[in-house]
Length: 295
Image 1 (cartoon, rainbow, N blue to C red):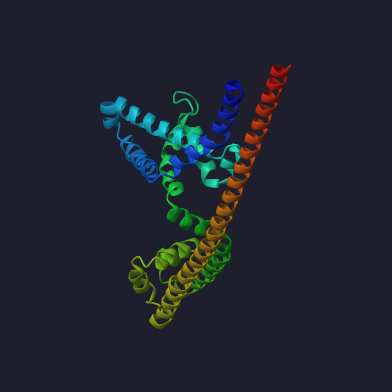
Image 2: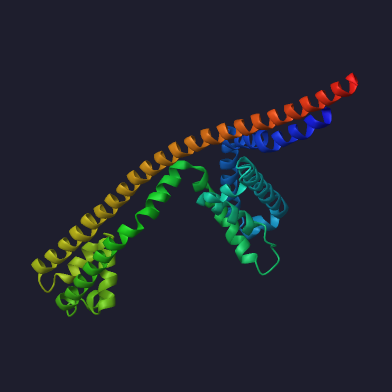
């Protein structure tokens, strides 16, 4: 009778209890803060490793700290994969988890091989893991990625405006200010400097020698269109993408809670079925023993 119960208990531990324990550890605030502190430590180490004097003096200590941080990242990934049992591949459905896993794989490459440059890149990318553990940063990055398609059209409009103003600038100010508007490429660089508002007054003073009114109209209109309107368009696109990301995250959380509750119900039902089957087998054994005793 004891031999029948033990395998069942081990199976329940692996299939039910272990994922819950791993999920509880991963979701714990203390573990979350430990991962954040580890990522910050990795950022500090990445900066220190650029100093050859520090590396030569504290090389073993830096290597130990880096290996400890990598070990924490590996433990975190293993816990997250365990939390998805009995479907561990669901861990890779999240893009941030895939990014974390790739960073870990890059950091595990041998340092003294042809992958040395890739390893250094992986160590630097570990600092980007701060995005994957902070939901607010995930929201910002997701909004930026989501707004790329709309930003493409705004960038096309901005490029068209640059091209038109560059041609006009060459014709209007090329003879009077050849160092800034002598060619189309120089005009592009001058307009880029103007749109950043970096010493645009000097550019205006050099160009107004031909006609102050035309130069004022040219520079003021370009700054209003390029800096004010285009910048507001980019901001509007990002804000709209952020609102869409908020809505998608809310819908994802609701779906996740619903799936989690359904999975818990299915797990409980499966556990009850296993318990019933075990009890049925025990009852059969007891009936067989009673039948032998009666005979």
